Length: 143
Image (cartoon, rainbow, N blue to C red):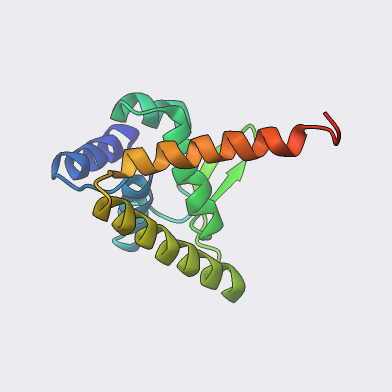
């Protein structure tokens, strides 16, 4: 599948009103493209920059999606060469961990919604938490 076709496919999904985070939409759509045969094993994916520009999103969003696809065994990234469809099977432990994280994420989104917050608010709170915990870990004892 050509880059422009893949971008058009993802843009259509985004326009369909899906409320999931963009990285998750990318992950799901690329997975479906592999399953339905639109993307073949060994096929090179667009670069992070190409896909980010095509979708009008942050390169970090695309990086997260590619990393998740790599964790799931769908993509392999070769430094200097790019990202390719691989379809290697993740271990049972990796699958279980991913499922547990997905359940936890869904629970967090649902709870945030009950409190009147959206996914972006939740992500911002997590980013703030990460920054705060990173600062705590990098401080030397007694400072």
